[in-house]
Image 1: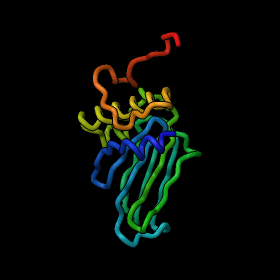
Image 2: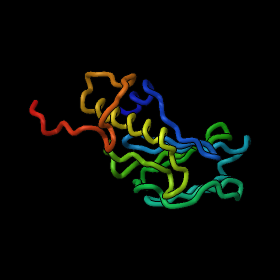
Image 3: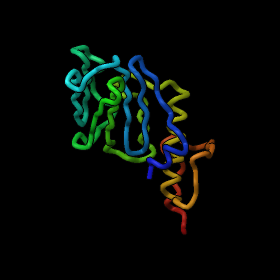
Length: 157
């Protein structure tokens, strides 16, 4: 479901020296620009539930402890067009309130504006899941959206 929401509403990337990362309620996407002509044999990628390491042609791109836990068995990486590495991590906590503020603990942090936009997007994604008959992809949100937005679970249907 989130794939269609992402296609319609776009992504909120956090730019880094090596590329960018962005997130949905369920996943974290990492895009790493590498020299054109890079082969998969030149890529060493370790994807753990709490840590990650990427080396290309023997050079460390990043290494460290992830902001939050992921399901390591469901993590993947691909090399596209011999110039872009895409890494997909599945979040363990898949709630709208689980908005990562950085990719690694203390590194590749989203600035305040990007963090705000990421949280708004996750809140709208949550609303889309809770109300599948509506289209929130172009919606604007203001007010209480931090932590996944307001809790409507106590309201009677």
